[in-house]
Amino acid sequence: MSHDLKIGDKIRRKGDGRLFTYIGRDYSDDENYVHVEEMLVPVYLPDFEKEEK
Image 1 (cartoon, rainbow, N blue to C red):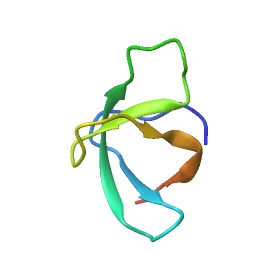
Image 2 (cartoon, helix red, strand yellow):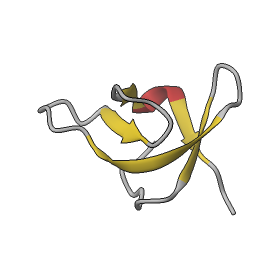
Image 3 (cartoon, rainbow, N blue to C red):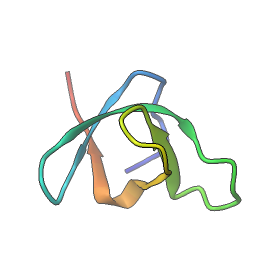
């Protein structure tokens, strides 16, 4: 997935289909980790796909 996400975009976890709300990039140097509203820890972005409206 490219990093063209905007705050509020929905991303779906490939493993179980659960939907999350993107809220921003992680502060580390690894651009593969982002923050979602539903979790306190960063998630690994390649495990997700953007939910198309």
